[in-house]
Image (tube, rainbow, N blue to C red; front, side):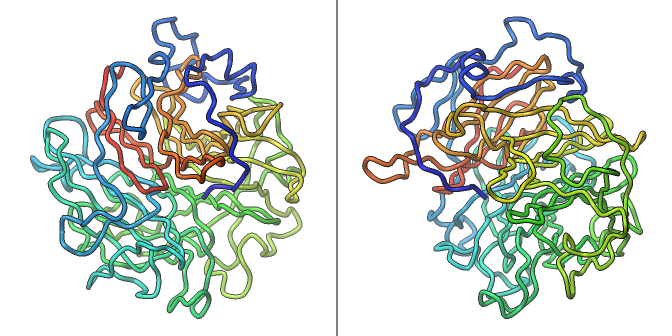
Length: 471
């Protein structure tokens, strides 16, 4: 979810690394190489991005020369299933291989189609709800959920349908090693609040191939809080979870130890243990500003994962307390550990320090937490590059970062050597005359063969497929 700020005019379209860094776009320093499995050697000049962005005459998506996009889906259009209209507020997303026996296999590259499972971060005020479907609806009074797009090998949309309905504020999530999607409710509202009929604040599992196999069952043992994203350790089955809390006390970073790890669809319903991360002597991650700084960590059992009386972040974790952070958002597994994002920290909102974005890495083998990336800007928070949100690995081993701040909205790439470059810009002005505004990007993900980047514009809800000379 984005923080609303005044919208400045759209800056010039060509952005160099120097302009981004020196003018306050993004500041990257420290142990960048540790962030990427491919190492931290300086990238050769030819690998520094794909060149300046070219204005889209259609006014939708600006991309580098040689890249093209296709609009796969747009909020308000009819769903191909006939279940209603495409819902609003397109957010987290993942791509799964389909066809040729891959639907319930281990995934991987190869010919065949793609299934995109897509979140809709709808609150009770959403104009375009996820249609309620029998067998897939948790709470008929909630308007969020997930939809699935089926793409053929040529990238054409052949189907679009509801995968989960009756959930609330489905922000991000994460894929599992057994090819399902874990969608997260970013709310703590209970039944009777905001018109809801059931408690919310849970994770739900979605089977993109056959949503009726997964149904609409909350994974209650994984905690009830304002979930943002999850990442699954593919070797041990541990599920890491971020909590996106706006107000003090801020959110926590969690791990869920399943009773039946790596078992497949439905195994997370068997329960498990929920724990929260504690960095001894560090009450809030925001005070760390030196990339490369490392800390030993402890994992503390959550007293009441259901938050039956008190929100988890307010519960008593004992004399050592617990470690908080503002706006914990993107979360993904890469290499031998889990990366997660603190989108920003503001002293004006009660945080002990200010920053415009951090990327952290947790190494489970060594029980070490490391700060890898610190985002700028130091001069003007409305310049490009503030407030990283959804994040994923790019084909070159670097990152793609969805921006969720003020002003123009970009997908930025970061090479394995730490070079920052613009990959896409939202050109669809949804503001008023004299007050331009562009919707944030969300849900960036790549096809199993790494040949297509999929990304959502949150508003107006639009799903794009971007093809071109990916390295």
